[in-house]
Image 1 (cartoon, rainbow, N blue to C red):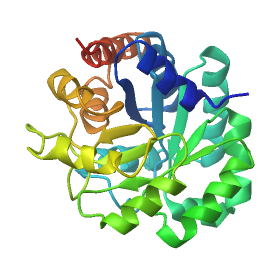
Image 2: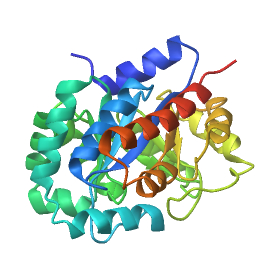
Image 3: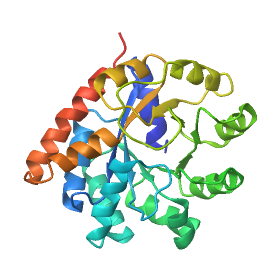
Image 4: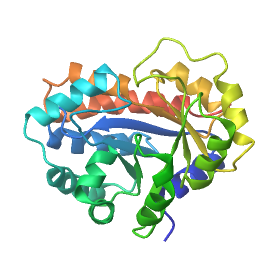
Length: 269
C-alpha cells in the first residue's frame, strides 16, 4: 500500500496546489485537545500533519514550541500516551501524519522499537531534526522496514554535496528549512528563498516542503508558488496556547478555521 505522504503530494499536484502541513505539539494543552484538533485539521484541509513529540532539550525549536513542550512535559506526558492518542486519531482520519522527534528519544527507545510503535499507532513518517547525516541511511532503512518515511532537512547553509546526499536519503519529501536558526513565526520570508528551493530542485525530483517562519496565509501563498508543500508550526502552536481555556470543541473549531485559511492559500492560480 502506498504511503499516505506520497499520496498527499500526488493529490496536491493533481489539484494544482501545494500540500499544507500544520504542526501541533502533542499534549498541549492536553492530549484530548490534541486529538480533537488533529481530526479537525484533517477535516478542514490539512494534507499532512506534523506531530511534535515534546522533549526537554529541543534543538531546532524556537521559544514558542519550546514553551509548548515544557507545558506538555510538566503534566507528566509519556510517549506511550502519545501513541495511544495517535491511534485514536488514525481511526478517525486518513490524513498523513509524521512525528517530529529528537534523535535522543529514538535512541533511548531504540530505532526499531520507536518505528515499530509509531507505525502501529498509525504514523506515516518521521522527522528527526538532529539526526546526524552519517546515521540517515541506516535510519531510513529501519524506518522504511516499518513502512515509514524518514524525512530529512536541508538548510540554506547546507553545502551542495551534502544537499545532494540528504536529498537522496530523504523519503516522501525534503523538508527545506527557510532560514538559519530556530523555528518561530516571522513577519517576512527570505528574499532568496525561491532561489534556494530552485537550487535544491537541481539535485532531486522529490517534493520539497518549506518550513520555519511560515506563519500566515500570505506566506503560504508565496511559498506555494515554487514549493510542493508549506509547513506552519509556531503560529499554530501560539494560537492554540492563546485559546487553551476554551472548551475543546471550540478550540478545535478555531484552529480548524486557521487551518482552512492556510490550506486555501496553498491553491495556485
